[in-house]
Length: 94
Image (cartoon, rainbow, N blue to C red):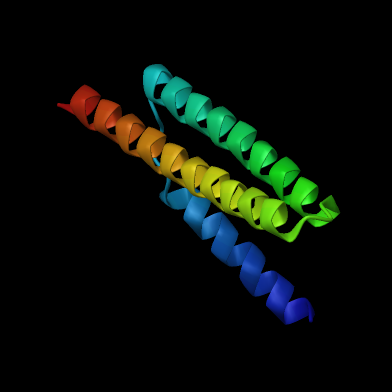
């Protein structure tokens, strides 16, 4: 178990080492994307909880679909913000 933990920790540190320094503007875009994604994920979690508490099967299915949509939107927002931050960094390096 300790070996697995060590390997995972090493992999995490190596991935952090691969990250370059971001400009302030790129960091702000990335943080805004993370915040928006977190809000969408929270909304999805609340919709999923409402679906679990619903006694109406049709309503529960609709709430689950809405929750999935919110989680997918969160992933898309985060990816889009990351791409925009990378574009800002690439433009700043030129």
